[in-house]
Image (cartoon, rainbow, N blue to C red):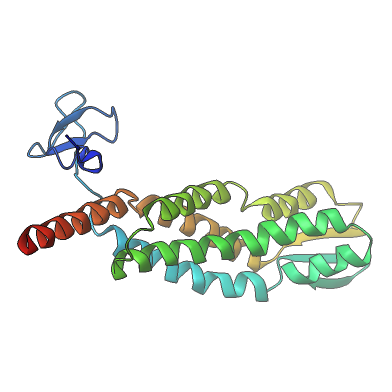
Length: 218
């Protein structure tokens, strides 16, 4: 006898997992019987909140790349550097590995994270079937990428702390550093707001519809 293994989920059995102690309890309970934390079957308005945060991150991403992230004061002259300008300068100075790290961490990682999260939200809204495992991989990659998004901000912070040579050379963070930090923080919150279990709920609902249609045809 064939079993519907895809149905064997806590939600299908009317169970919900506590976010604090991970105890399974009946979904009718509003608080965990073990630790007393509030319990929810799924995150409320997950897709809508994620989309709102992603739009905010996109707005912050523009000044983060256009405005100067670092200001260098040398012998009374100030020079501003954007993220891309700093990468180009490092390449000209022969520091290609450092330039590659900053470009990947500051440009490619945030942009890739935004694109993946937008795709996940879009696929949930459109109901794209048969892509649950692919979307799960995208979500895991998104979480992993978020840990490496602040490298260039750390570099600027270290330079500001270390480089102060008797007033001859002073490095100050620019306004883009705040905007870039905002992008990273907002995208991290967006990834936390997104509930990947919705992808599998959608898959189960699609299979239920297919089974129902097959039964009607029979």
